[in-house]
Image 1: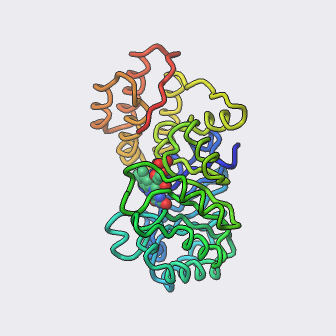
Image 2 (image 1 turned 180 degrees about the vertical axis):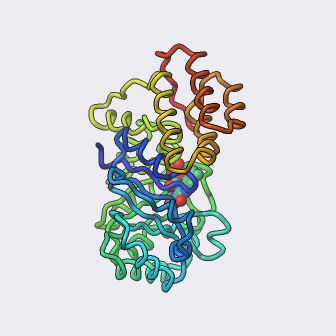
Length: 323
Ligand SMILES: Cc1cc2nc3c(=O)[nH]c(=O)nc-3n(C[C@H](O)[C@H](O)[C@H](O)COP(=O)(O)O)c2cc1C
């Protein structure tokens, strides 16, 4: 396991089966998707499922989102009974619904509040606290260095920085310079995020920024092999061969079966529809993808996986593609 390769949190994606599939290819640390402090104290069934863990699903960070110190401290109390390895605070989410409540990346514009919330979290948990930030709100307010120093002062043990501004969302390319500046300014470990789409780009991130770890997000969708490949490339400069169609089919079946166990058949099939499309990206199987979006049960989805295998030679290597 290469502990410098991290599975980045992704809302609607980073559930237990997704994490376990990526762990089986060498991902070190993983995170839950962001969960609001408010929903944690409301104890809803959906939230309880989001925070369910398995003994092998470690080390695992719980990522929380919030603006109100009282709610956050109650949420810390609630999660203390769960076996997380760290608490990660989200100050990076760019979506309107979140930043309009001054949560997520909205906090980059309120450094005092940001620091206060981290201080509250550190005070109310025995676990190490980490934080995820962006380079700033927009190009005219690149304050990641100030924000990172404030996080460090609050007692945060490591930080992840996505090298884009809130206003950029996911557009444009990652800014290596700001990540390098943050790394040079703080004493705590820095995990870099942004455009970790291939072993080469991951190595570039380490070289350009001096970061301690790289978080992989979109590059892992339907492509857990990226952990094996990046790890090999970082070790000796060679990229292990791409998976063959047969191996992709096996991983798809394993993922689907874990989803079924975790969510029940109906919901598993719905969640797996997008994964079907990601796993088969770059393959000439358009018709099967279309059918997968209408599949209603495990049997139907499994038959489609077999159709993919049947129409391509089992030992065809699958090209790496960016989702
Ligand atoms: C669908 C999706 C959901 C995301 N959800 C979260 C989230 O819940 N928490 C978070 O900190 N970042 C979230 N992110 C941001 C990623 O963790 C990552 O920082 C970003 O995608 C840049 O990395 P990449 O270019 O390798 O994809 C999300 C990204 C995507 C694409």
